[in-house]
Length: 115
Image (cartoon, rainbow, N blue to C red; front, side, top):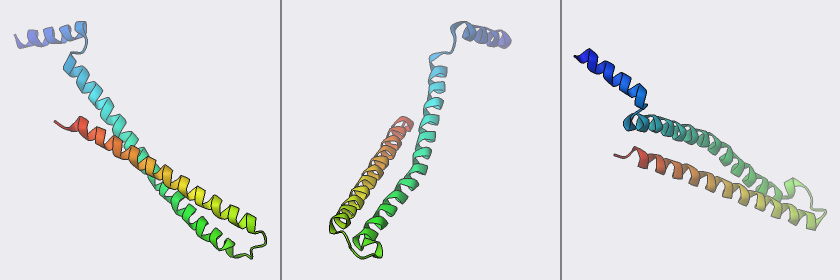
């Protein structure tokens, strides 16, 4: 009778398709995969964004001392200094937004994993 029951279950599953639990498990695997892949990718990008901030900080420091050169054009010196500061602010803003995105995804993933 077990063989008949197994046959009936398989046959019935083919006719009806996946039951709700099977669909839920399939969607969970897809969801989990999406979160893991995206969080890992964003983690790799985080290093690049941190490096961009470091480079912008170094650029600002160099421009403060006019890259070791005499200041022949005061207006250009100030413009370069302001430009370097704006670049740093932009890099810091992008880094902060990136970290917020990672934190959000990790938080949402944790909610889905909770029992």
